[in-house]
Image 1 (cartoon, chains in turn orange, green):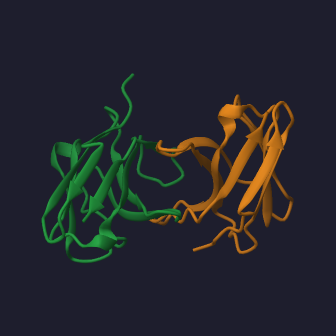
Image 2 (tube, rainbow over the protein chains, first blue to last red):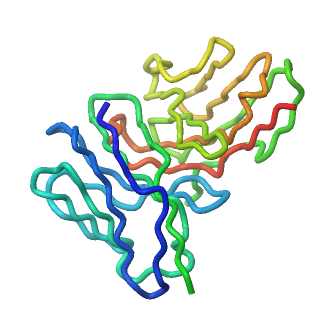
Length: 110
Length: 115
C-alpha cells in the first residue's frame, strides 16, 4: 500500500490559512488522495478527496502536485474549531484496507 | 438524517471476558467498516462488509476477534478473552457503495478498557 508522510504537528493563527502538507511519493495512478480529520473524542470526519485535479468544497481546498507525489490541504480561514488531527491517506479503489497513519495535529491559536 | 451510531460509548471489562460492540450504519449504506484506534496511534483497519458478500477479515489482529452483520444493516464486533492490549477506541464507518473511494461516515466510537 502507498503510505503517506505528514508532519507530526502544526500551529496556525486563528483567521489565517492553514496549509497541511502530505507526501505520498509512492502513489500509483489509480489511487485517490483523501483527507479526514478527527476532533478530540469524536470519530473521523471526511474533508475532501481528489485524484489529479485540485478540488475545493465548503470546508477546504486540496492542491495535488502535477506528479501527484504530494498534496496540500488548505483551510482558508482557520477557526478554533478546526483544531484536530488531520489524516492524509491514499486509497486504491481495488483494495479493502485503509492506512491512516498518525496524521498532523493542527492547533489553531487565538 | 441520523448518522452512524455505536453502543456502548464506553465499556470497561476484565481481562479474559468477552465483549460485544454494536454499530448501526446509516440507513441505505451497503458498506460497513470497523477500525480501532489505540492511544497515540492512527486508525487501524479491522474488517469490511459489503452487502451480503463474505467480509474481508484481513485486518483482524487475532482469531479472538470476529464480526457479524445481520440483514445487511447492524454489525456486531466481538472480542473473546479480552487482553489489555485490546484497549482502544473501536470505530465503525459506513458508506453508500463498495469502493473505498466512497466517503466513509464514522460513528462516535466505543472506548474499550480492559483491566
